[in-house]
Image (cartoon, rainbow, N blue to C red):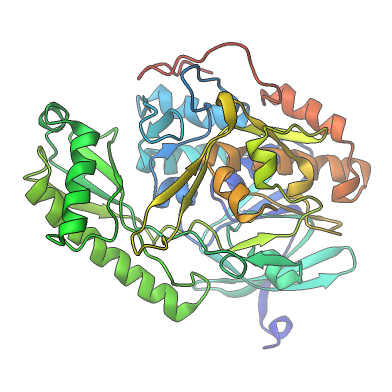
Length: 452
């Protein structure tokens, strides 16, 4: 189709960010602090991506150990601080191996993202879907479809692909690895929320240990057709409500229209299988009902762009540091995949001694790219490293680094890979980013977050 003959509106911007998930939203906030016009586009009618569509907990702020350290700061702190002002967070204990989580109200978070994305240098367009890319010299024209208007174009000097699926990179011809082509792709999950839980009775009956025992019994006996024998159900900010990571959909391609449709249906089917299981088998859940499903099925990986550097499992497990590091990660490899024995369990591997590794700037720069960055789950990493470095505190950190890098690139009229790394690191530190492992042990008690 010839888009140029059907364009109704044409826009220009300096920095274009595609996708307003946790990575893209933070990238927009960071880029807007410069002197340039920034445009953020999002295919849904609200910001936040996974943070508001599917989940209710930020992981990755703290290392998972008996002496937890807070290793993410800057603009990600600002998001949590705003939630904290209205009592919409609490710290969840390290019960599943990923470290202390910051539990939040995802509906309130939508409004918080809206507030934080209000800036004189920033335009935000919702209901906007990328459909094609046309290169014009060293800039790109991105053609979008907007419901009720038609096609329009945005000409940008710099682009940050935070779409999750690397949609811009795909249409721009930037090379990537598709999850599942070389190693089994991680499974997909429809999260769901249930109301009317008696949490006191649940904890008295054994809590997590009791739940896991009963899931295993139901799975192995076939009394309930569960897709897995392990999963989580945790308290929410809303009293008497819980959120789950239990549904597991495997062997379907989230980039394929027909398979993704099947995955959505299967995820919803499994959610109500779990509702029946919880009501029948789990103490404290006898009267629960599902009150909400994730906006769409949760996708853990699709395309991973080939960057100037690829983060590897060895980098993570050796707590490697890089001269051009732009954030830290201490999260374990958490690999949700179909197991060889027919079950569906999660594989865990931990960074030794509660340490963290540095993530190099080069993982955010597509190979041979002049004006493009990637942030979020499409960044440059192997399957295993990606399974460690995909927590939302880390994806927000990617956005923070990419947004500031785009500003520096314009300031110096330099390609993405040639910016002054020391200047970028200085800018990150001034914002409050953490690039060195702190000595101080963090307060991870339930109400331990106090304007970090």
